[in-house]
Amino acid sequence: MDIRRIEANDKDSVNLVLEGSLEQLQRIEQLFRSGQLNKILGITVEDIQITLPVKEKDIVPSEVLVNLSQWLNNVVDELWKTVKEVLDEERVELIFSHRYSSSPAVLKAQHIVLGMPPNSHSLALVVAIMEQSGQERDICLQVHPIGSKNLPDNLNLVAFDTTSGQTIVQDQARNDREWIQLNINGQPGEEFSIKIELGDVNVTQNFII
Image (cartoon, rainbow, N blue to C red; front, side, top):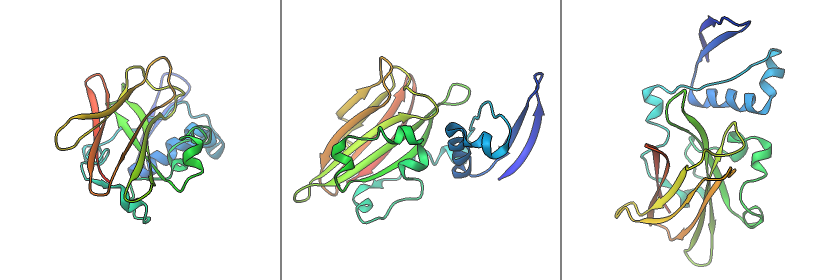
Protein backbone atom coordinates (compact mmCIF):
# COMPACT_ATOMS: atom_id res chain seq x y z
CA MET A 1 0.00 0.00 0.00
CA ASP A 2 1.31 3.46 -0.95
CA ILE A 3 0.64 7.02 0.21
CA ARG A 4 -0.36 8.93 -2.93
CA ARG A 5 -0.68 12.41 -1.47
CA ILE A 6 -1.42 14.46 1.64
CA GLU A 7 -3.99 17.24 1.38
CA ALA A 8 -4.20 20.02 3.97
CA ASN A 9 -7.66 21.10 5.17
CA ASP A 10 -8.83 24.46 6.50
CA LYS A 11 -9.36 22.77 9.85
CA ASP A 12 -6.61 21.34 12.01
CA SER A 13 -6.53 18.12 9.98
CA VAL A 14 -5.27 16.56 6.75
CA ASN A 15 -6.59 14.15 4.15
CA LEU A 16 -4.32 11.17 3.60
CA VAL A 17 -4.85 9.49 0.21
CA LEU A 18 -3.73 5.86 0.03
CA GLU A 19 -3.55 3.45 -2.86
CA GLY A 20 -3.71 -0.30 -2.46
CA SER A 21 -5.62 -3.45 -3.25
CA LEU A 22 -9.30 -3.72 -2.41
CA GLU A 23 -8.48 -6.24 0.31
CA GLN A 24 -5.93 -3.89 1.91
CA LEU A 25 -8.33 -0.93 1.86
CA GLN A 26 -11.15 -3.04 3.29
CA ARG A 27 -8.86 -4.13 6.12
CA ILE A 28 -8.09 -0.49 6.99
CA GLU A 29 -11.81 0.28 6.93
CA GLN A 30 -12.49 -2.63 9.29
CA LEU A 31 -9.85 -1.37 11.70
CA PHE A 32 -11.41 2.11 11.56
CA ARG A 33 -14.96 0.81 12.18
CA SER A 34 -13.77 -1.26 15.14
CA GLY A 35 -11.87 1.68 16.68
CA GLN A 36 -8.53 -0.12 16.44
CA LEU A 37 -7.05 2.17 13.77
CA ASN A 38 -6.83 5.16 16.10
CA LYS A 39 -5.01 3.04 18.68
CA ILE A 40 -2.59 1.63 16.11
CA LEU A 41 -1.72 5.03 14.56
CA GLY A 42 -1.92 7.05 17.77
CA ILE A 43 -4.00 9.74 16.02
CA THR A 44 -7.70 10.45 15.52
CA VAL A 45 -9.05 9.25 12.18
CA GLU A 46 -12.36 11.03 11.54
CA ASP A 47 -13.56 9.17 8.45
CA ILE A 48 -12.59 6.75 5.70
CA GLN A 49 -13.89 6.55 2.14
CA ILE A 50 -12.99 3.89 -0.41
CA THR A 51 -13.09 4.95 -4.06
CA LEU A 52 -12.91 2.06 -6.50
CA PRO A 53 -11.20 2.44 -9.89
CA VAL A 54 -12.85 0.89 -12.92
CA LYS A 55 -10.91 -2.36 -12.68
CA GLU A 56 -12.04 -2.86 -9.06
CA LYS A 57 -15.66 -1.96 -9.81
CA ASP A 58 -15.68 -4.81 -12.29
CA ILE A 59 -14.76 -7.20 -9.48
CA VAL A 60 -17.41 -6.31 -6.90
CA PRO A 61 -19.86 -7.82 -7.44
CA SER A 62 -18.64 -10.46 -9.90
CA GLU A 63 -20.53 -11.57 -13.00
CA VAL A 64 -18.87 -14.97 -12.60
CA LEU A 65 -21.10 -17.75 -11.31
CA VAL A 66 -20.43 -18.44 -7.62
CA ASN A 67 -20.55 -22.21 -7.04
CA LEU A 68 -22.04 -22.64 -3.57
CA SER A 69 -21.76 -26.45 -3.48
CA GLN A 70 -17.99 -26.07 -3.81
CA TRP A 71 -18.02 -24.17 -0.53
CA LEU A 72 -19.05 -27.41 1.17
CA ASN A 73 -15.75 -28.87 -0.08
CA ASN A 74 -13.80 -25.84 1.16
CA VAL A 75 -13.32 -24.42 -2.36
CA VAL A 76 -14.05 -20.70 -2.08
CA ASP A 77 -13.03 -17.77 -4.30
CA GLU A 78 -10.67 -15.33 -2.57
CA LEU A 79 -13.21 -12.49 -2.88
CA TRP A 80 -15.38 -14.26 -0.30
CA LYS A 81 -14.17 -13.85 3.28
CA THR A 82 -15.20 -15.05 6.71
CA VAL A 83 -17.84 -12.85 8.33
CA LYS A 84 -15.29 -11.81 10.96
CA GLU A 85 -13.06 -10.40 8.23
CA VAL A 86 -15.85 -8.24 6.80
CA LEU A 87 -17.99 -7.25 9.81
CA ASP A 88 -17.24 -6.10 13.34
CA GLU A 89 -17.71 -8.37 16.35
CA GLU A 90 -21.08 -6.96 17.41
CA ARG A 91 -22.48 -7.45 13.92
CA VAL A 92 -21.09 -10.97 13.67
CA GLU A 93 -23.16 -11.92 16.71
CA LEU A 94 -26.30 -10.99 14.77
CA ILE A 95 -25.47 -13.23 11.80
CA PHE A 96 -28.16 -15.76 11.15
CA SER A 97 -30.28 -17.65 13.65
CA HIS A 98 -29.40 -20.33 16.19
CA ARG A 99 -30.36 -22.82 13.52
CA TYR A 100 -27.33 -21.85 11.44
CA SER A 101 -24.93 -21.44 14.34
CA SER A 102 -25.63 -25.00 15.48
CA SER A 103 -25.69 -26.63 12.02
CA PRO A 104 -22.82 -27.53 9.66
CA ALA A 105 -23.41 -24.50 7.46
CA VAL A 106 -20.66 -22.74 5.50
CA LEU A 107 -20.83 -18.95 5.94
CA LYS A 108 -19.00 -16.44 3.76
CA ALA A 109 -19.23 -12.69 3.26
CA GLN A 110 -18.32 -10.12 0.63
CA HIS A 111 -17.93 -6.35 0.94
CA ILE A 112 -20.05 -4.49 -1.62
CA VAL A 113 -20.00 -0.77 -2.35
CA LEU A 114 -23.37 0.33 -3.68
CA GLY A 115 -23.23 3.59 -5.63
CA MET A 116 -20.47 6.16 -5.98
CA PRO A 117 -18.96 8.44 -3.31
CA PRO A 118 -20.06 10.62 -1.63
CA ASN A 119 -23.48 8.90 -1.83
CA SER A 120 -22.22 5.32 -1.73
CA HIS A 121 -23.28 2.70 0.82
CA SER A 122 -20.87 0.14 2.24
CA LEU A 123 -22.63 -3.21 2.64
CA ALA A 124 -21.86 -6.83 3.42
CA LEU A 125 -23.50 -9.67 1.53
CA VAL A 126 -23.45 -12.73 3.78
CA VAL A 127 -24.30 -16.16 2.38
CA ALA A 128 -24.75 -19.50 4.15
CA ILE A 129 -25.26 -22.89 2.53
CA MET A 130 -26.26 -26.01 4.44
CA GLU A 131 -26.77 -29.60 3.27
CA GLN A 132 -30.15 -31.22 3.87
CA SER A 133 -31.39 -34.75 3.19
CA GLY A 134 -30.65 -36.10 -0.29
CA GLN A 135 -29.39 -33.42 -2.67
CA GLU A 136 -31.35 -30.56 -1.11
CA ARG A 137 -29.46 -27.43 -0.06
CA ASP A 138 -30.70 -24.63 2.21
CA ILE A 139 -29.32 -21.18 1.43
CA CYS A 140 -29.63 -18.04 3.53
CA LEU A 141 -28.61 -14.62 2.23
CA GLN A 142 -28.33 -11.48 4.32
CA VAL A 143 -27.31 -7.88 3.67
CA HIS A 144 -25.80 -5.89 6.56
CA PRO A 145 -24.56 -2.31 6.74
CA ILE A 146 -20.87 -1.62 7.30
CA GLY A 147 -20.10 1.42 9.41
CA SER A 148 -23.67 2.09 10.54
CA LYS A 149 -26.32 0.37 12.64
CA ASN A 150 -29.18 0.32 10.14
CA LEU A 151 -29.62 -0.21 6.42
CA PRO A 152 -30.86 2.69 4.28
CA ASP A 153 -34.65 2.63 3.95
CA ASN A 154 -36.02 1.08 0.76
CA LEU A 155 -32.92 -1.03 0.12
CA ASN A 156 -34.13 -4.15 -1.69
CA LEU A 157 -32.71 -7.67 -1.77
CA VAL A 158 -34.24 -9.75 -4.55
CA ALA A 159 -33.56 -13.37 -5.55
CA PHE A 160 -34.66 -14.32 -9.05
CA ASP A 161 -34.36 -17.12 -11.59
CA THR A 162 -31.24 -16.43 -13.66
CA THR A 163 -32.79 -17.73 -16.89
CA SER A 164 -36.35 -16.41 -16.76
CA GLY A 165 -35.80 -13.36 -14.54
CA GLN A 166 -38.82 -14.37 -12.44
CA THR A 167 -38.63 -13.23 -8.80
CA ILE A 168 -38.26 -16.05 -6.28
CA VAL A 169 -38.36 -14.04 -3.05
CA GLN A 170 -37.51 -10.52 -1.91
CA ASP A 171 -37.08 -8.40 1.20
CA GLN A 172 -36.89 -4.63 1.77
CA ALA A 173 -35.28 -2.52 4.47
CA ARG A 174 -37.62 -0.10 6.22
CA ASN A 175 -38.20 1.33 9.69
CA ASP A 176 -34.54 1.17 10.78
CA ARG A 177 -33.90 -2.49 9.97
CA GLU A 178 -30.44 -3.76 10.86
CA TRP A 179 -30.37 -6.37 8.09
CA ILE A 180 -32.52 -8.01 5.42
CA GLN A 181 -32.66 -11.73 4.70
CA LEU A 182 -33.79 -14.26 2.10
CA ASN A 183 -34.12 -18.04 2.51
CA ILE A 184 -34.19 -20.30 -0.52
CA ASN A 185 -33.50 -23.96 -1.26
CA GLY A 186 -32.52 -26.00 -4.28
CA GLN A 187 -30.38 -28.79 -5.66
CA PRO A 188 -26.88 -28.86 -7.18
CA GLY A 189 -26.79 -27.43 -10.68
CA GLU A 190 -29.69 -25.01 -10.20
CA GLU A 191 -28.90 -21.35 -10.82
CA PHE A 192 -30.24 -18.17 -9.27
CA SER A 193 -29.22 -14.53 -9.01
CA ILE A 194 -29.62 -11.85 -6.37
CA LYS A 195 -29.93 -8.11 -6.81
CA ILE A 196 -29.23 -5.47 -4.17
CA GLU A 197 -30.86 -2.20 -5.21
CA LEU A 198 -31.55 1.25 -3.85
CA GLY A 199 -33.35 3.64 -6.16
CA ASP A 200 -31.71 3.42 -9.58
CA VAL A 201 -28.47 1.92 -8.26
CA ASN A 202 -28.05 -1.85 -8.07
CA VAL A 203 -25.56 -4.69 -8.07
CA THR A 204 -26.18 -8.30 -9.14
CA GLN A 205 -24.50 -11.55 -8.14
CA ASN A 206 -25.05 -14.89 -9.89
CA PHE A 207 -24.96 -18.24 -8.09
CA ILE A 208 -25.10 -21.94 -8.95
CA ILE A 209 -26.00 -24.41 -6.21
